[in-house]
Image (cartoon, rainbow over all chains, first blue to last red; front, top):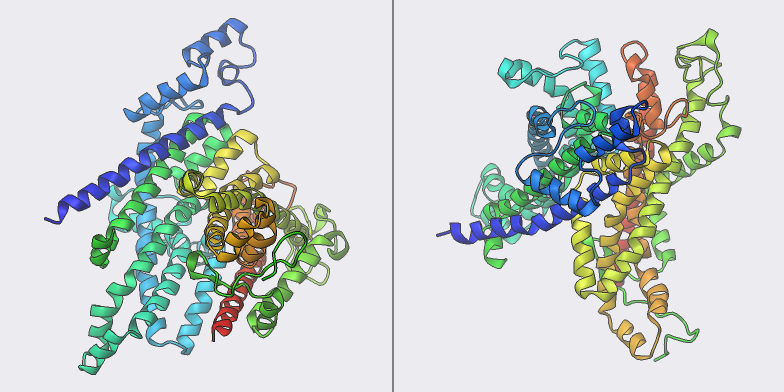
Length: 320
Length: 309
């Protein structure tokens, strides 16, 4: 009986983000159209005749007006055809498909680290509020929010890959080659990416857990003789989770942005390094494809965050 | 009651008028009161001193730095710290300390530019959305939400793909990406102020909208904007670092904190301090900006609670 309103919410939200995505795609499309330099001339080469350039321009459909070109691109994009790369001639969708698992692996490992470390640190800081450990963790979190993730990555690579040789300094091993090797290649970049969200989770959890532990119902439960572990587990964490999840949702866009740079540091062939190369080569279809892909991902994650409120706090379902 | 127009004294908002995003309560407190509270916040004061020193040193870089940023000394390449070169030299024998100071100037210029673009774009749009409300507000807010779901660096890279690389283009792009943050903040505060009685009084007395916005609304959101400027300045410094590291912002031989790390990353195994030093400079600066923002926010909310007590 719970499903219909939930399903309606999901569908409404998804439908609501479609105009946004189309508008964004058009803005990026129109903006990239302003790029100086004639694409047809670039493809044909400097020495090509005017007739050759003209032929290429027509074959790419570049002689049509902006709106009809966007219409065509959109019609293709909806069917999963994002055009071909200007520099390599590959299908953009194929390039994305081969790199998405890499970036997703990185995001998955780093968010797991952020959640585990952030929750543990936040729990300790809230329960031992004011102690030396609490202050140490708060200082650490402030510093890791102030440091650029790619620089943390470089420092980690120096200590753990170059000096201690515990992990490979660069590269990526697919999951199919064995989960241990996969994790070994991902761990350092994932820690670098996890630093900021872990610190945010810790701060948020510390704050909201302290609030929850100060409420009357927790005091009542304590008076009835409930032990601290049960108290925190049963009442504290679940109620403190909502702001934490919200913060994580906010941070997802930022973490994806950092992925772009961290992938370059560790020479991981994911979405980020693809984007950097495409920008340097002005490979417009690839840039457009990556921008849209990441935006869709952020929209979906934010949707999941919204839906998780229903699990952590069923009353939010009734209110909305 | 004094009429708040025709050169009369500007009316100050009741102390508890404005509450904005992230639970920051902004009183109509006098700046002097906030400063008095802030002065007793040790960490905020330390941060302020550090920031002033950094700004002074980088602004006066040619006077402060021991050498020019691109002065080469090929006989003394890749040297460790010494009396002559306090932080050692890089692969072309350039003094690292001098490059750090000059690089800080480029980084702070870039970050300042981005924040300025965000302010110039975000405040007027936020005032418009918050004051007019209705469909204008709905459209602008939806656009801001949409822009915020594109990762900042991704959008900046997209813009750089068109405008071409360079620190100015890259930071203009970052500034554009930050516009929604000021828009949302200004919108939220403005629409709260908009509903207060004294604004209603001003309108009914025939005070022109521009004057209401300038004399009554803006002064009341100034302090929360200040907190946001400090935080976004930190974010912009980190963004500059990322973009210059990728070789899309400041480009060699120009030094910025990001391009210094990018240029030295290939020598990480043999000369780690070349990577370490610019990163530490960045951490100190961004941390100071955050601590200062925290201090101002605390001072603001304490001002409110004292006013209510």
